[in-house]
Image 1 (cartoon, rainbow, N blue to C red):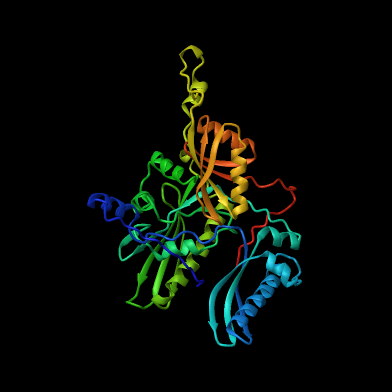
Image 2: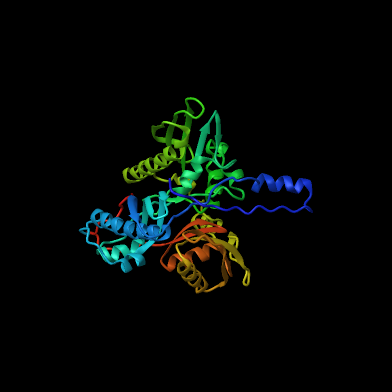
Length: 413
């Protein structure tokens, strides 16, 4: 299992009243979840073994990482049809975006490890001469449900199932996952009870909070044979507001120590099932989850007498506050997106309130008009816009390619 480092800053104030502290604890208390590690579309080559000796431990580790980059590049090149030709170390340094330590042993003069190497998708594709275009699904909200000992959990407490989804690198999947971190109101809104609700209006309100179009409910039931003994996981790929079962499978591990490995394998297979369902057309969003038509649109469609219509326009000078979620792979993407939004006529300010490099950031926009007008302005600039009202999610539309060019949907690994 790859190393996962996380820090949480806990703060409390002695001046807060007891009742206020109880409400705060209900929403924020405890370690409820883990933020996704990586949502970028990097190419990943995992399981690269190295065994290097050098004059010191640091030198051996550095040489081991260099060797891992070379071996991983050869594997990636062969996998994508590039022939497996090796490039210079300087070129590799410019296209490698990260090293994942799966397992390592460090001695005074020796370094033995199993590593994963992440390559920048655009740069690697340009060197190999291949298209990096990949079609993706509409944004889908992930609610990972864990059943153990007869108790179901999502974000009420930190669970190994949610941690496994946070570790998984979703950038190479055809599914556009929205993975909540479990902080803030997530534990109140997304719970086992919510997965059993059927009213579409309620679901619409929930997914609009996250800028999603549909719901995925990956579920696992853990069965322990005895304390510390074998663990059997029964995995269910569920989808939609009706919690429909797409497929079920089971995996087994010999001891409780192997539970993270079991769940990582379950996430990978679950992703494969969802991608297969997307290709077969079984992962269609429920039409009832689409936002209802606005009052102005309904009036235009049903009322032929303009004398009785109600004016739905925004008064001049009125300012609407809208939160926009966008993909922020790096600092340059943040600056470019903010500049694009600020260039829209009527935008008074556009500031990123919640920054998540390599994931999804949130920008607060003040706009002289209503949210529908801002949405139309964003779409006019070539962006895909999801959601409605005060919460929108934007994504750059894929560039048009020749119709005979097959999309690159290679799975990392």
